[in-house]
Image (cartoon, rainbow, N blue to C red):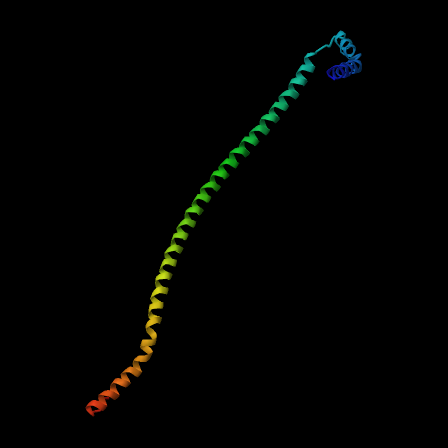
Length: 142
């Protein structure tokens, strides 16, 4: 099985080499012709290169500026978030105190409600005591 794999690999390498036939000749013919470089071509190429470099530097400057702006904005937002969290914690503490007070008031009201029936009975109790006093002493008290 390993031999069949090797044979397939060798055949694919040979196919690749066949596909590249003449590739070397293409470049060999190109190197034979001398290329003349004039000072005008170099200057124009240099100017184009200089313009590209300037554009790239300008773009890089814009990106750096944008990056710095984003970091400043992120820092501002982080500070605002921290302040908001502090305010939230303070508000929660106030709510906890209010809830504690509410529980205390509810207990107090409940104790008063427990005593209310006795208070409602008080006028009858006073009337009953007055009648007993009249019966025992024979004197009416107003």
